Image (cartoon, rainbow, N blue to C red; front, top):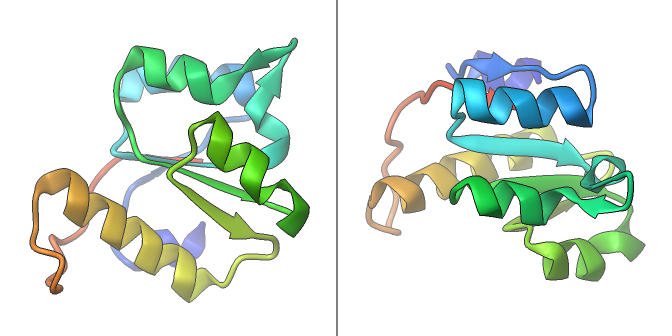
Length: 117
């Protein structure tokens, strides 16, 4: 996530999915980036749990064959592994622009704190 930090974002890391859910409530990040393997914990769909807390843009990274399932579970964006770092930063920028109400024509709202990975 050095690319995101290099773009000026504050990255909050979680050691596992349960820690990530805990940090979701503590840190209230602006975007979550997670691996597809983190989307199920003890049979519970993590995307649904995140959506129950509040709306937060969710980017999931995984293999190409998982895209449809992960998007159906509630992810906003699916990026295939290994992600292009430039693409990942651009997707974060775009999701934050939408969340903050910036016009779709461009303009970077600037660095935002609290991207959870």
